[in-house]
Length: 185
Image (cartoon, rainbow, N blue to C red):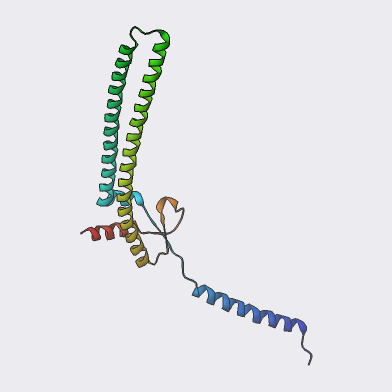
């Protein structure tokens, strides 16, 4: 009996197809399942005392900087008035050329005081920002640890901010809040 070549080709194709499906399903089963979760940071911020305390600290440091800047501005204004008075007294009885030289001298003094004042404010801003950054990192390290723990327990491999999720995902917000509150007790 003669074999039909088409049946032989179909048999080979069928064997390869079954092998492909078997290998493909085995590879998929071995690959880790990716599950996406999300958290609502606004809800977490409004619920956790540590984040509320950080917000208060940030407002306090902002008020401190504003107060310091006003103090430096007052000092600068006082120095400016003093220099103008000195300049005007020194200019009395002088000719135009001497008056221009005096104006130039006092403008340079005023410019120097202004630069020093700005530098003081910038240094204070940098100091306060560094202080805030250290506190923020402490708080966020703790929050990140809690998010990681909750995600691992829920079998979630990726956690996003709620605003970034268009569709789907597992909401971990309430679990994170509960875990954080449990950790502070």
